[in-house]
Image (cartoon, rainbow over all chains, first blue to last red; front, side, top):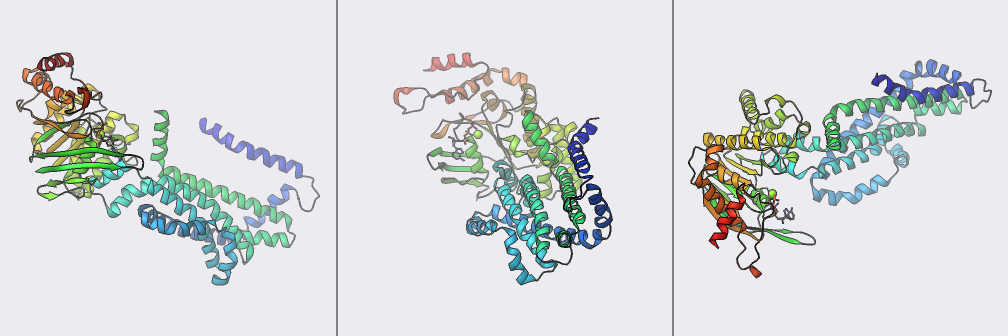
Amino acid sequence: MAFLRRAGFALGLPIVLFTLWWVTSASSTDFYFPPLSRIVDSLVEEWFGPRLADDVLPSLIRLTAGYLIAALVGITLGVLIGTYKRLRDLLEPVLEFFRAIPPPVVVPILMLIFGIENTMKIVVITFGCMWPILLNTAEGVRAVDSVLSDTAKTYRISGAARLRNLILPAASPQIFAGLRQGLSVAIILMVISELFAASDGLGFAIVQAQRSFAIPEMWAGMLMLGLLGFLLSLLFRLVENRWLAWYHGLRRAQRAG
Amino acid sequence: MLEVNGIKKVYEGKSRTVEAVRNLTFTLQKGEFACLVGPSGSGKTTLLKIMSGLLDPTAGEVLLDGKRVDGPPPGMAIVFQEYGRSLFPWMSVRENVELPLKQKKVPAARRKELVDESVAAVGLADVHSAYPWQLSGGMQQRVAIARAIAYEPQVLLMDEPFAAVDAQTRADLEDLVRDLWHRFQVTTLFVTHDIDESVYLGQRVIVLSSSPTVIRDDVAIDLPEERDQLHTRSSPRFAELRARVFEQIHRPVEGQAHGVATHAPDVIAPSGATAVSATSDGGH
Ligand SMILES: Nc1ncnc2c1ncn2[C@@H]1O[C@H](COP(=O)(O)OP(=O)(O)OP(=O)(O)O)[C@@H](O)[C@H]1O
Ligand SMILES: [Mg+2]
């Protein structure tokens, strides 16, 4: 019952908006704002048809690759920077500099170096979404509770065991916060990297549709992107809820007490 | 043998420097059980951290079996005062207790035995799969104690480990600690605010002054080895020892102006406090 009510709450507004769009656009003759029914047709025929393998899949593969590399590099560097104060002092200005560069502007530069193929796009995604992951991880590692750290020391838990049993779990709430920010950046960069120069991908296909005045298809592409982002964040939430179950429980206990 | 030689600790802060302890020297024999009492802020926790190599002293040194301690030595367990923060919240009670044993490379079967035993000993057998934050403060404290005893340490340092438990559990845990000490001859230093507890538990009570901290007194507890909550605590010798510790804690600091008694508000007065004060007044 409670589940149904929650599902009703979550789905209510989207259904209302969708219906509203459907009704108001039903008799539209405006070339740029076609009826939603036509957009949905195109979504089903094109995007869930041939374009799924031709465009959506390549985009997703690049996104996954770029994101995973960013997670690996970001968490590794974040742990190092959070652990060693000297390293932090050394790298902080450089990091701040790189972080301040809006990732889209590096696309033209990376195009020169890596060409327009997959490597460039993956590098763009990695470059952009690595920073939130790295900085959040470093922050989390730095904030490990001193009593917990002393406890680990007295029981001589060091090296890899310390990383696995203390540092990473203790920092995991922040790491996940970084990963969540990183994911939305990654999706944006996935599209942007395909706008500049590409032969396939979601961003590429949407721009293609626009240039060839396939307006319903363009709209449908946008819907597809929205859907994709929604599903990815849902997936992320599922993973996070599993991993951080202890943290959510702890927070609830602290709030209640 | 654990030797504390001329330990001094000054915390250097931005706005203030604190001399937490001035000069502490004492020796714990192998297998000895000593209690440490002193007012709040007298540097008991600081001393324990130095003894375990977690903190460097400003002056002096700690020797364990003749070797200078400069990091946590093997075979030493500590129960921290902030018990709640000393448990890993992402691990169940069981995993918390087991982790140090894994690190010590204790074989799995033996590990299970040790965990089961120690968790049962502190009365938590039925919550071994719970997470620490699902437990009350007193239960968390007992998990920290279970973890320390499962570790089978040669040296056990405890920082007010029974502060958050009720009187009955406290009495049980006191007997548990004594029992463990008897069985394994663990060298034990037990910090407490409770004078009765300090007299009841150990062979010796070290009394610290308030800051600047020095050792006030070192009272040998010559109660019989077999102790029990009821008879030991009501024996005349117990009352005498308790009075002596109480007096030392409440004695004014020598050389202090006006002879104003430094009171130690955080030290729990023994249940017979009025009687004790009467005795000490008579002594002046
Ligand atoms: N990390 C620190 N930095 C600065 N000062 C500190 C630090 N830790 C402790 N102190 C100071 O050192 C003194 C002794 O503190 P400590 O915690 O050792 O006392 P304690 O005897 O354990 O007290 P309690 O019985 O309340 O636990 C206090 O004045 C405290 O303010
Ligand atoms: Mg303390």
